Structure formats: C-alpha cells, structure tokens
Amino acid sequence: MELCFATNNLHKIQEVQAILAGRHTIRGLADIGCTEELLEEQDTIHGNSFQKADYVFRTYSVPCFADDSGLEIEALDGAPGVHSAYFAGPQRSHQDNMNLVLSKLNNTDNRKAQFRTVITLVTPSMTQQFEGTLNGTILTEKRGAGGFGYDPIFLPDGYNKTLAEMSAEEKNQISHRAKAMEKLMKVLVSFK
Ligand code: IMP
Image (cartoon, rainbow, N blue to C red; front, side, top):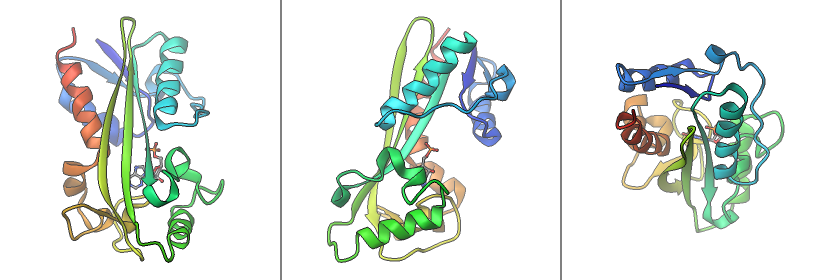
C-alpha cells in the first residue's frame, strides 16, 4: 500500500520507510505534491493530529498518518500542551519557550510533566489514533545541548540525564514519539 506520512522531515520519513520496506511505500508531503502548510487549528493534540491526517487523505486521496506532540505540565494544568511550539509567542523560539516555563514554575514544588505524541492514521476503511507518553520532571535550569524544544529542561523519570544530554539513539528508545510510532508500525505491518 502507498501511504503518506504528513511531514516534510526527511529523517522521519526514512526511518519509517526502513521499517516498512517491502510492505508499504511511504511518501512525504512533497512527494504527493502537498506544499501548503497543514493547519493545526484544534485545541487538543489529538485534534490537530487528526486534522492534518484527515486533510491530506481527503485532499490527495492517499491513506495518511500525521503526528502531533506537546509538553504537558501538571502545575500548569497541562500547558503548554497543544501550544508547545509557540508558548512564548509566534517567534516559536525554543529558548523563549523554556524560559517561560521556568519562570512560570518558579517557586513551584510540583514539577511533574509529560510529553505526549498522538499519531492519527486515516485510510479508506478506518481512522485510528496511537499515543505515546514520556513522564518526567521539569528542572530549574537547562542542561545539555542535544535534541530540540524543551529537551534541556526535561528529566525523564528513572534517568539522571535530560533529553538534551542523551544521544539521539538513547532518546529514541524512550521517547513519546517512538512509543506512538511503534504502536502505529505494529498495525501497519499487518496491513494489506
Ligand atoms: P510537534 O507536534 O512534533 O511539531 O511538536 C510541537 C512542539 O512540542 C515542538 O515545537 C516542541 O516545542 C515540543 N516538543 C515535541 N516533542 C518534543 C521533544 O521530543 N522534545 C522537546 N520538545 C518537544
């Protein structure tokens, strides 16, 4: 089957292609001629993940899956959540976003947080969502130079390194995205 992964991230596409080689052909957005920005207008991570996959399926008539992720902080009632990419403003600066989180948690003892990824698969016969989470703690300062987003301030439960201090391989073993992707792959490999 030919499937679109609704992303322009070549690295993500190649990773999935390698797992599904011989079973399915994975196309990125550019491969199917989708050059417009996919809208993310919903107020939940589940909603945005569905909106992107559903749009591509209906517009380009190709089975599609799309992912959406965010950081949910308990003491902030789940914020930044669906607004993670632009929490501190439209400049979408990872540094500004982290600084804002740190200042909002100043003097807060409860620093529990989780990353969440939701992947939505839309085909002619079904729509299904796959979820992965990673629990951890927000530190009081940034540590590490790897990764992206909120990685330098996120300490996964059971580890003494932030996500930004881990190698890409280490992060991929435990990440929210990897867990959701693993669930999707289990379904796709059994797909005709
Ligand atoms: P996206 O839906 O994967 O584009 O993620 C939205 C935003 O959530 C990103 O811009 C980051 O701010 C944050 N985020 C998602 N996944 C991660 C991660 O693995 N590490 C750090 N930040 C993340």
